[in-house]
Amino acid sequence: VGGRLLEAPIYNNQQIEDAWIFVLEMRRRHPNRRKHTQECLTVFGASFNWSMVLHGSSRLRAALHSLPEELSAEVLEDAGAPGLLRAAAIGAGLPAGGLPGADSLLDWAAAPDGATDDPS
Image (cartoon, rainbow, N blue to C red; front, side, top):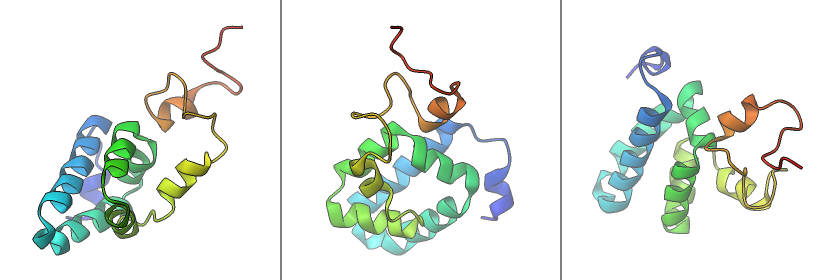
């Protein structure tokens, strides 16, 4: 798969998220397919659009947390984002408990500066 195909605007974030989760499940359920999933994860992680979903999807982050720690570390290493879960655990400067009311990092980034869900 060429990088240009993944950058084409034919995939929406939901489809990209589903593809990431599919590969995570393949890796978890079929250890003998490690080499195949590594190849997919490396290609996904090299794509700007696909890596944005990796970093911004709360559903994908939950799927990563459900994996055994060593497996999630391996997956993130293959995707080129080895510190992703560690940064999330520290908080990375975000409010405790994640982004209130935001489905993804992209939603948060699109909000005006200082915008919160708290109307007071």
